Length: 74
Image (tube, rainbow, N blue to C red; front, side, top):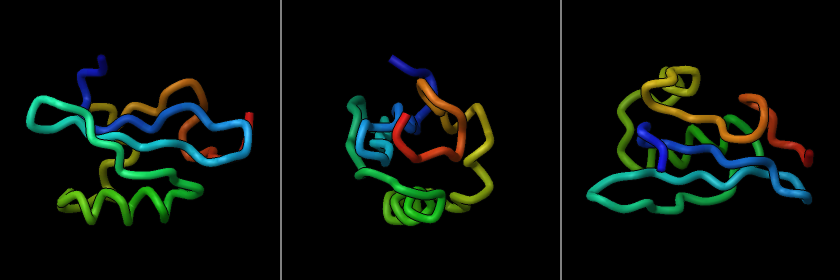
């Protein structure tokens, strides 16, 4: 389990990355992001105050099994 609230999972074979948010003791799937803009929209809807500012903050976001900001198939 990650110690940060937002996890951007590895790119899928067809592209896109699943995004989860840990809150209230469980992980919530926010959706599949195909760009930073998708990710920002998911985080805005989840109530993150300034989502663009947290994308590169390792206290908030873990980019798992792939480079940050890359959403294409591995």
